[in-house]
Image (cartoon, rainbow, N blue to C red; front, side, top):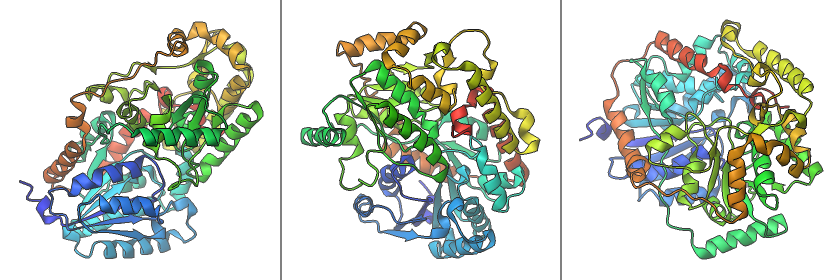
Length: 523
């Protein structure tokens, strides 16, 4: 049934790290299904650094006897933390790939987040290796570098990529017949407009879990109460400390809708460029005495309750992200039987609705009365940040750049909270929560209804859809994966096609609708 896949006996999974997060979660969920009933004789996990030993042991036990080897190659880590020259890094990466695939024709490289370009040398050497040896290559794109990450352009240039087109050739694997998997349909649609680029929609897998054991749920509740200092209701956002998660908005929602509640996030800061954002937000929380605990699981892995147990012990799951590829917490909240309060992201919610999810607590925007901040100063901040951000974009692309939404708003109407700078968001949060709510409630009738429901103990929980298992369950995921391998073209994608597909993506990502000041300015 799978003649091409029968030639593949070795699956090599490549990622920069094994820190807790969405990519690691997909690897742990998917691998057992990918090797089930397939002729995979060995699996290698090739990463930039060692992960949690307990997590690796659990992954190994899940593979049904298929041996798992973990290879740590420091040259696979983020380029920003490397000390070697680009040339030396290329040589290290190339030598590592030869060892990882002693039989290239029998090896499948499943490469996570090459389009994020945290180490574009790794992506480029992988595509060169695949082009030389006709190795099967899956580039699994969870995020892209051109999506509100233009500060990375100078880093790419330091790595030897002197033009936007040269970046495209690495990201979209010029000279290979690589498969490009995206986690939402909107990204897949752009790829599929370019017929020689093998794009496939591969939504993240998630399954309906058994209810969390009562003992585990009670243990998680006690653990939270011990860390927080009381047993108040907990609203949880399972996430790393990232600007795109729009964490100040989660604070605002919790303070307005559940004043006696705690907001808890799980993991820590994932890169140096997020540290200013984290420091500013945590300092404001300390000054204001907010009932917030960021990164509660940092340095606690292996000792703390699992995230599913913490979600089950929480009152509400929150997801206020300004930018997501899939929105896994949405699905996991439903699987855990918990209410979900989330932004209606235009590239996420339509996919979830296709799977049958009907999420009752979705909002498009939180509207802020302009009396809560100095609007003149905020506009000046946004002008300055926007000009600085635009200067970071390659000159050939600047004409495509839209302007931040707040700069387009005239009159005395409300402002979208997510479109403020972090300084503007913190200015709003510095106001007494009750007074801010009174000013803003008329602009947010949906939140007013939800506030009344919460106050009366009516928490609306979405049901797990019957057809979801057949669409995003583990076996459905494995079937989609192996069918993509089977159908892959033997025609190599040209450099020109890579340039064209990346330009299509960039044209979309630079519009006003995707510009959030918190993403192009740390403050």
